[in-house]
Amino acid sequence: MIIAHTPDADDAFMFYGLLNGKIAVNFEITHIVADIETLNRKAFLGGIDVTALSAHAYAFLHNKYRILSAGASIGEGYGPVVVARSGMDINGKRIAVPGKYTTANLLLKLAVDDFQPVEMKFNEVVPALKRGAVDAGLVIHEAQITYPQHGLVKVLDLWDWWHEKAGLPLPLGINAIKRDIPVGAQREFLVALRESVQYALDNVEEAMQYAMKYSRGADKELVKKFALMYVNQYTYEMSKDVVNAFDMLYRMAGRRGFFAKPPLDILFL
Image (tube, rainbow, N blue to C red; front, top):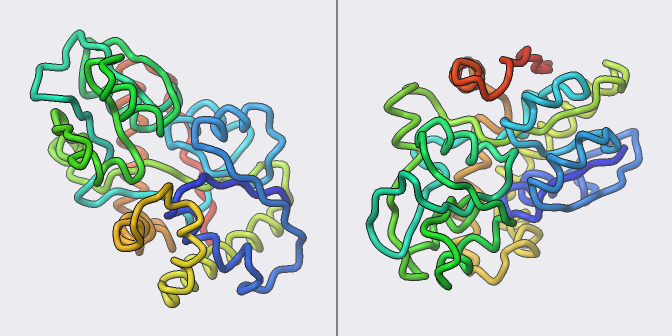
């Protein structure tokens, strides 16, 4: 089975048990690591059995993949933020975004009517902003925490925007499995993924040693904070509130004409 996740501490943390022999499985694993927008685009080709996907990307890929009820990245009190070198009105401004199909980009499009997106890899956003190539930057991953260290200020908090609109957890990323895999095998993988998430939560320091491979130079306490922000009770299994949040996100985007609301096909045990 070909499994892909992002080079981020939270993904590495949750997959540690599965990829390092801590969870017994009856299938062979081929492991791929790539940034989320690369995985979003690879999924259109359909060559990966299980992949991390942006919730946004799923809207275009639901005919190929279904959502797993484990492994999701859900914000609760935090999420992507737009930062700049100083406070500003970002309407009409050039904003660096970490990929067309990222959920962060979708949220920004929902929240701000008029801006000029400049697509780049997530880890290029802060450097581009610091050198003045763009007016503002939409940051994800650990940059949500570290941006003040770069002399940047927050000009829009997309968690705050979402919570005011929806009053629900913020759906950002999912793990998705190919539809053409037999349902029994889909369920077998889901069990293994849930066990891997639980193993990480039960063995935080051990799993963090592995996750530090994807720290991008950040210190361990910051990486640990970030990993535990996005690997939580919702990652083990989606709650009803999380399912409702996905539904609301897709309805909001559908009303704006960004895409047709996809069927919300989530595999539960």
